[in-house]
Amino acid sequence: MIKKAIFPVGGLGTRFLPATKAMPKEMLPVVDKPLIQYAVEEAAAAGVEEFIFVTGRNKTAIEDHFDHSYELEATLQAKGKSDALKLVKAMIHGPGAVQYVRQQQPAGLGHAVWCARHLIGNDPVAVLLADDLILGESCVREMAEAYDGGNMVAVMDVPFDQTDAYGIVTPGDDDGRIVNVRGLVEKPKPAEAPSTIAVVGRYIIAPDVFATLDSHERGAGGEIQLTDALAKQIGKAPFKGLRFSGERFDCGSKLGFLQANIAFGLENGELETDLRNWMVGRLS
Ligand code: UTP
Image: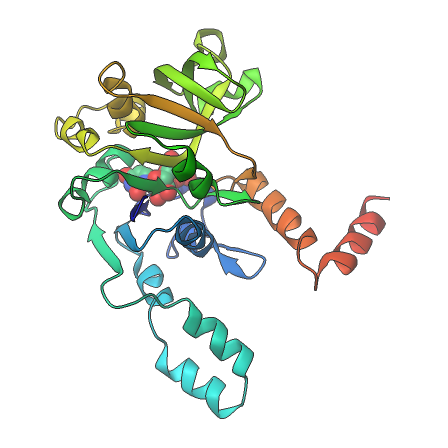
C-alpha cells in the first residue's frame, strides 16, 4: 500500500507564460478544477494519506487552495449554498495530512523530489506531476495494485518523432501492460531513442532513489533528473513500467491543456451537449 505521495510543483512553467508569471501552472483549471486537485484526488483514490508538496516562490495559491477559506465558507453558509459549501469543505484533508517543503531554486525534478527526503521514511512513495493529467481510472491506483517492489513508472507509447520530449525506456520483457525497464534515457533524439515507450509523470520510487539523488548529478538541460537517478537503480532493484488505462494530457503545453479542457468538458454531464453542439457548428 502506498501511503505517501510527493507533488513537485516548484517548476517555472515557462511554456505557459504569461499565464504562469504570478500563478502556479498547477493551479490552471481544467473545466472547473485546478490541475493539482486532480492529482491529489487521483492519489487519494489509490489510498494515499499523506500529501507532500514541493513548492517554490509564487506557489502560495496551492497552499491556500487546500486550506479553509473562512470568508468564503461563511458567505456560502449565509446564502444557503449548501452544495458549494460541501464542495469546498470536502477538499480539506485532516490536520498534518498535507505538508509543504520548499525548493529554493528549480534545479530539476530529481532535485524537487530530493527536497522531500526528510519526510519520507523507509517505504516506497508515489510521485505525481500535476501537469500530466489523466482522464479515466486513477493511474496511481493501477500502479499501486501492480507494484511489487523496486521502482515503477507509468508509460505510454508515443510517436517516433516525439521521443525528445520524454524519458524513454529500453524495454525488456513486455506483456503489453507491464514492461520490464532495462534502461532509461531522458529526452533522446528520435534517431537515438531505444524505443517509443515514454515515461509519463507518475512514479512509485523506492527509498534508495533518495540516496542516489544525494549526489546532485546534473543531466539533460543541466537539471538534476529523476529519470537519471531511477536509471542508476537498474540491476539493483526491480524496475517496471505500467501502461495505464486512462488517457493522458500534457497540460504543461498549450495544445495539451486545450485538449484536456475539451475532453473533460465532453465528459461533464452539464456541459457535454452544449459543448458538442458548439464544436460541430464551429468546425463545419
Ligand atoms: P517541467 O519539465 O514541466 O518544467 O516540470 P516546468 O518548469 O514546470 O515547466 P516549463 O517546461 O518551464 O514550461 C515537470 C514537473 O516537475 C516540477 C514542475 O512543477 C512540474 O510539475 N518541477 C520541475 C519542480 O518541481 N522543480 C523543478 O526544478 C523542475
